[in-house]
Length: 331
Image (cartoon, rainbow, N blue to C red; front, side, top):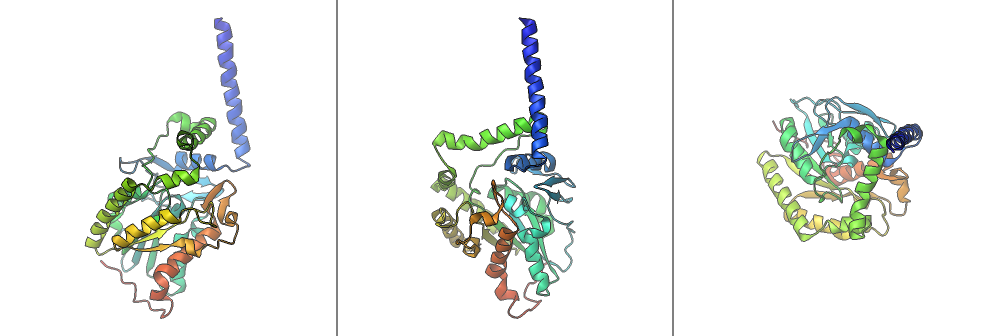
């Protein structure tokens, strides 16, 4: 009996090793959203404070979605940033994996496209900083600024809001088995993402819609009000970019949810732009996806988001007069 048990254990272990090897081989040729996210979490992230759960590893780099991703000394997917901004006008973009630019080169992210727009308008002193971190919600994004990024002394902060920003914080768990086993990581990710739907008989539409309870909205507004009061005290302009969920654009299923956020922003007197208006609803949504199983915006999607930022917040200030003095850095 003992011998049979040992042989069975050896067979299971050997099968697991073989499956692991085959998966590594397969996914070296074919991309999968969950595997790429696993690589991102395992190679570029580590634990952080209770308010943030996880953060980027300074100076880390990895190939994610066939793109080389490099993290700077501040934990940002951005060129190195000097603490002393000198005479630069500094715009800091807080956000999640969309702002981070999951699946696109750094130069194709909407933050860097916006930077190029300013340079084309002879606004050489404007510096746009990408502070996006995958799986962050609004609370984590604001905590990131308060804990790490205040010394950058930005002149503007743009919070890049997404439909799932009212979710609870996703606590970082990356044990040795999850970190090193592709089989375990894929099964774990599939189960973790499917579980909420099975529990409540939800699809992604009803799941996102369920986040917009009165309680969640009140908590989000309270968080935003507190942060606005803080940045106002430091004469920092606070804006919000509303990034649409692009599984479906026509008819758009989250009009109500984004309207609720817009109303809260108006109550707080926070300037915002809803980028949905800049997306072509007559175009196939897949034209904006980074992959067939991943709705993160591709290069075209980032171009649209950059245009929404530019035309929504800056075109009246910069383009018509081409004046370099309209954006004033503060000390």
